[in-house]
Image 1 (cartoon, helix red, strand yellow):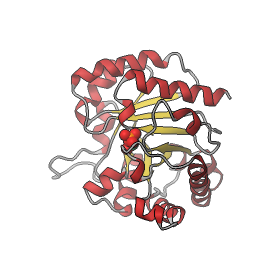
Image 2 (cartoon, rainbow, N blue to C red):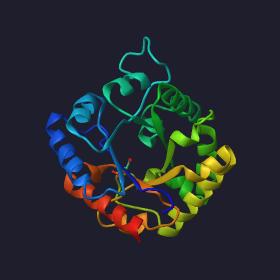
Image 3 (cartoon, rainbow, N blue to C red):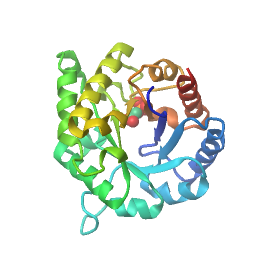
Length: 252
Ligand code: PGA
């Protein structure tokens, strides 16, 4: 792990105000891991309340619109996320790509809009199972990354990338450590090709069924700088055990 580890919990469409207790517990627990950057992305409805409830952890959104404002019923802009207390946003999550038909071009526009509004960005990429089975995963994900990356001055400094194989999300299945390492190495090369030396410092997270049992070995893979965690981020106990594994991997 070359960078400071970054562990991000993605609550997806989970959480009402009752869940703020978990966020507070995560925030308090984070004091034990000063070497780890920790953040949560609650649903939009909880961003402001969660921001008020925590002191040390980061708060982000799960998506934003490409426009700053306008007639887009049900959507939320990057500026609104910032105003609600978020400092970053996830773009290109596979559930957005699949459920809302978001193309690489749309994802790229969202990333640029977020940067322009003053947010940092976690950009997600990942292959489906059929692409993995065809042996084309690295080619596919590299092309997806190339087409989704925000190309703007200073973008690399405010960007993280999450490799999340679609078939590993919420399934309990994870790629082999060798496959994770190989994919991250391939993506690092794309980032350096896109941004030069600045691409070396962009944090590359792994996501997809990360849990307390497998986080330690995944986070010790050299090319992995952190994790994007869905299901296991919903309770303080399970999320903090992943944070603890990141702390150990960092110290190793
Ligand atoms: P999961 O989700 O940890 O529940 O597999 C990860 C994600 O979709 O970010």
